[in-house]
Amino acid sequence: DSGVTQTPKHLITATGQRVTLRCSPRSGDLSVYWYQQSLDQGLQFLIQYYNGEERAKGNILERFSAQQFPDLHSELNLSSLELGDSALYFCASSGTASNTGELFFGEGSRLTVL
Amino acid sequence: TQLLEQSPQFLSIQEGENLTVYCNSSSVFSSLQWYRQEPGEGPVLLVTVVTGGEVKKLKRLTFQFGDARKDSSLHITAAQPGDTGLYLCAGGPSGGSNYKLTFGKGTLLTVNP
Image 1 (cartoon, rainbow over the protein chains, first blue to last red):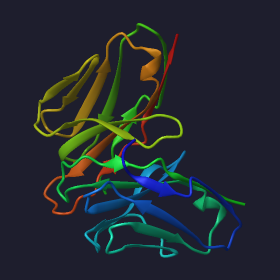
Image 2 (image 1 turned 180 degrees about the vertical axis):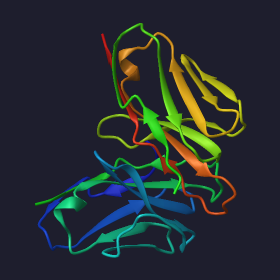
Image 3 (image 1 turned 135 degrees about the horizontal axis):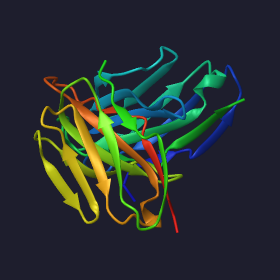
Image 4 (image 1 turned 60 degrees about the vertical axis):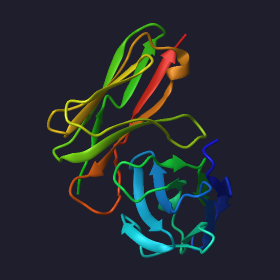
């Protein structure tokens, strides 16, 4: 158990819809990261928050947005969903914003867009 | 954009065999991490290497960071079925102040009993 909690574990929805994925980081960790994992693209970094502020941005689509709340939990919002958005979405946390900090991953949220 | 190429993409071996998987890039990384991901789970960190030429051992697993900090290898001795999983390498950017790991696509290892 990494200590990172993600909900929901599975989500099935239709094209055009909007979903919200939730992540609670490990106790005390200030950094939260969102990753998308698909078979063809591998694990792609989407966005990082550190203590409520956006710290780094990766290949996140404009249809996607995220935020980190004062209690440090984070939400990833995916809107106008397309078939290609079907993937595993992972949240990870770390206690540092440095380059060598270990990432602790949650079990992921599997999104299926029909 | 920094890219990490992992090879082989798939590897299926028998219990007791040795194997090496590779992680290569044209970019320099300040650190290199190896993760293992099992089905239905998130990746779990195995090791972090930060110095060019560094070798770290974790039981039957040996990790090496290239001298130029552009590549890394993972060697498993006497593989066991419990070693089955997706092995991911991830590089930390050199010279950047933001933390943004770049992951390779992974090597899917199957160890057959």
